[in-house]
Amino acid sequence: NAGVTQTPKFQVLKTGQSMTLQCAQDMNHEYMSWYRQDPGMGLRLIHYSVGAGITDQGEVPNGYNVSRSTTEDFPLRLLSAAPSQTSVYFCASSTGTLPGYGYTFGSGTRLTVV
Amino acid sequence: QQQVKQSPQSLIVQKGGISIINCAYENTAFDYFPWYQQFPGKGPALLIAIRPDVSEKKEGRFTISFNKSAKQFSLHIMDSQPGDSATYFCAASIYGNTGKLIFGQGTTLQVKP
Image 1 (cartoon, rainbow over the protein chains, first blue to last red):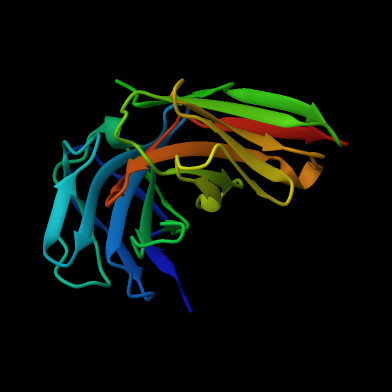
Image 2 (cartoon, rainbow over the protein chains, first blue to last red):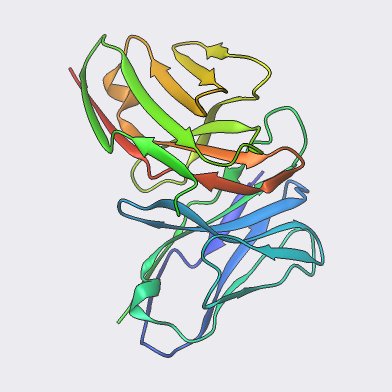
């Protein structure tokens, strides 16, 4: 059981480049989310999805796009990378039902924009 | 605007002591409050969670205390151990919309032997 798999683990981009961060889960979870983690800022929600075909914005959605065509995959696209998007990105998934509603997180993607 | 405020930012506790981390929230619609633990280089992992129908929940050495009227909740780690050294995050969401889980800023805990 792989859980939540994020690729790549590390990435360096030049300002203005675009890329897609991949996230896949094999637990048949309906809920999936993307967070970014920055020192002193905690984890900030970028976008989330409550099922295939349904996405919504989180706290810091600007500069990012998502889509959810299947239950398993939830890619995050950076349209035109900026240095302010240098961060560690986490994908998470959950059943969205009691008990616990607990999110399972991936191991993260460390992105540097130069 | 930070919807969930967490303190302190860092905490140093001696082995065997009690670690206390506090969180406060603004949105009265929040009704699910989990705590996550994160070790360096890893993703956060769910530690313990509480709904507002109870004022306290205990799992082993970890206890959540919840004060609905004050809109505050806290994590107590009893008999703290060096292996508890990690970053702890509180979070909150609305029942039925737990996809929108909002986190606090995090507390880095160091337990000294």
